[in-house]
Image 1 (cartoon, rainbow, N blue to C red):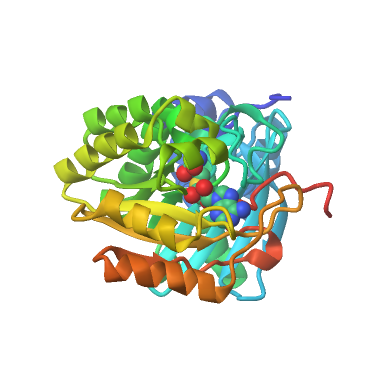
Image 2 (image 1 turned 135 degrees about the horizontal axis):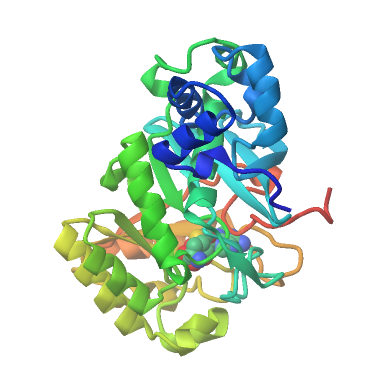
Length: 358
Ligand code: SAH
């Protein structure tokens, strides 16, 4: 239940009005806002506010639009998964990945998912609702706070963090279909760019291929990276795996996507999950090559991550390399995605409300 105002959701003016309304001088708004922009989970950490004020604030307001229910660390020491609860009780997941090129956050765009892809865990319980701009942005700030480390969190000043403890990349590849929530997605990306300075080229949005949504992104016009979850080289097979293909055919999805990346001078990312015996044959690789020949794209091969409720089989390492070799022989730029956090259920397609499993 939303019982108290959420300061994170307020504009600077609203925050000022709020602090004045509780009898505080205006400058407190600036102090609080600095902490909020660092992802402070509650008022107790705001050490440059008097203790009495921190306690009072705690009684009348909330910082974030979500609380961390659980935090799981992968044994790779680089991946942290957060289970977050929104104020209406919906739970979502986000993942922080520390990489050699920076710190990336995998953001969920919806609670649940309506798309029904046959291989994915995120859609098993259906769609609950779209996430708001603030709820998406909060996922980035939760990761931002985490990055500063426990020692740093006790530090009094919210400023002056070393650059390498900032979130530098955003991938909208968590639960949900971002282009079914395009308006909030765009608002979120603009806020991440504006407030955190995350460059457009460090942002990637992955879609199962909602053509009108891709066109909307095109009309919006900022040069983010686009990833298409293709997963099959022809409509017949794709429709079996992904119900969305009954509505938007491969050729229409690719036309809209290449239009987007050409305009923005980017390379299209094609995601292709390998499902043993389903879409990983030599013929599939040849057919995919034909589809993508001389197109400005990069294929990201994703060996399927096991989902208990789904009856697919993960491909062997040999099958993955065989598929990649054929694409490369045909001149298609191809990489195998390095999976992170499989042990904590945060690898691709594993994000879900897993309270049953715990
Ligand atoms: N709805 C968007 C955003 C989700 S992105 C989309 O479809 O692109 C999540 C990525 O992980 C997608 O490419 C998705 O197809 C893939 N994925 C889903 N289930 C998976 C699984 N079990 N193993 C590996 N990848 C999976």
